[in-house]
Image 1 (cartoon, rainbow, N blue to C red):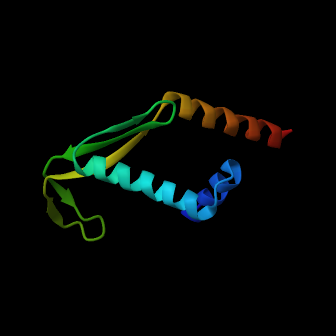
Image 2: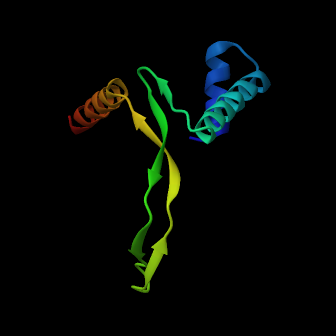
Image 3: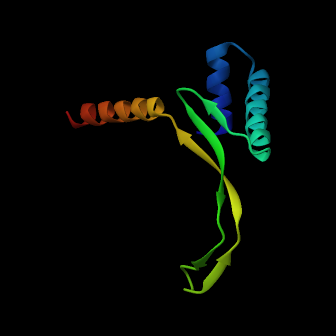
Length: 102
């Protein structure tokens, strides 16, 4: 699913135009990115949470060449799905699997 697909679905479900919906979705993305750039986390109950995690410097190995390489300290954005989100997806997939096996 692409951003355009999301815009289509949200616009269809809300009655907003695609242009208005795209502006809202872009605004959401920008807000998440800006908050993470400032080191803030975002928690959306029932959906998940965005955070920035610090990764320590380390020695790693290039899997292609086997060469040892130094990876400096860096920060990565992460997303953790809520338990409710995981449960809903799991239940839906289990239902699809059991109905397909019949």
